[in-house]
Length: 345
Image (cartoon, rainbow, N blue to C red):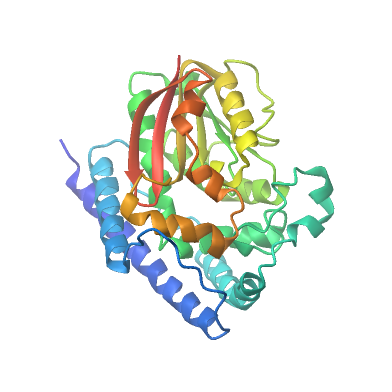
């Protein structure tokens, strides 16, 4: 029997959250427009209107609320930061808009390569993705990342991440969480891991990332919950034994990897998964997933410095995953994301 109260609470909370971030996006856009416009880019494919985007986002909010009502996973937290800290981050994000706008106008995306630790990291990683100052290599970037991404996607980033909880909940129904292990590759600031920890409190969980500052932010973000282990490591060479993980998750990583690295990471995912294990993949839409939105996918890497996005958008994921023994269990579109569940044969 559906829990209508929980469903209503989730629907109201996520609607309010998206409304708030939609307003922040309008505010940031107005501030950026005062600084002039970057060179225009006209995609060859169709682009959705704002109303079409909002309608699709609304459908995802309803779907998420229904899953909560069905008891698949808990109601989302309204806000996991202390209120003063949260508004401090927002002020810093708004103050950073002029710098980010100038870098976008000048197509400057090399500040990450100037960081002291950059020499020890893969060149593809030392990029100013989204024109973030310092890329993923500074404490300030880690501090602002979540509010920047939520503002960009009108509060939908959390709901897109939560779309993976459905397949995880169904997979765990007949299993003892206390005997299970989950690995989140490229865990970033730990946003997805916090959702997983709240939904599956007894499971052993580990987060891996290349960025020390982002791992530190993730540890702060999960403070107060059951311990999650964090390891500074590369997804191309995961420091785990063969067949050691029940679940591997990955959220918005592949579109930031070169083609050959994508395949190395895929091989590592398959290696560490147990037979019958679950791989939950969440990333951007690809070309043809929603043909009426393909023009937006063309424009995204130009507007936000995503040098490997085009390669990802036309990649054959099914062929790549099948080549390492992963079988597709389910696939769905969740607003601007595709959510895929794969099982290791």
